[in-house]
Length: 78
Image (tube, rainbow, N blue to C red):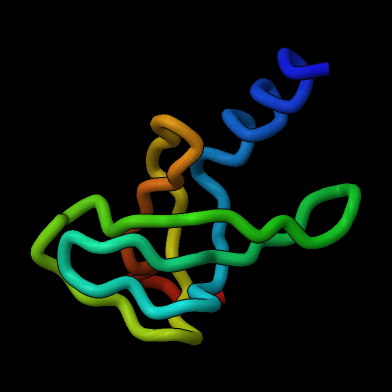
């Protein structure tokens, strides 16, 4: 079960999500993204640790480390 969950999370790299709790520089916020089974809410940090990303922003998931998703703002809003 853990292996399947981990694989699903890593399949999320490269998809868009919405910031549901603002991400302050160097701090953890929260993102929400749609998956085949519904909404997925998870802790997130900005890939650029000096960046602030406000609630409601669309981001792209770049990496996942220790159950934290690293994101960057989406230059082309959906």
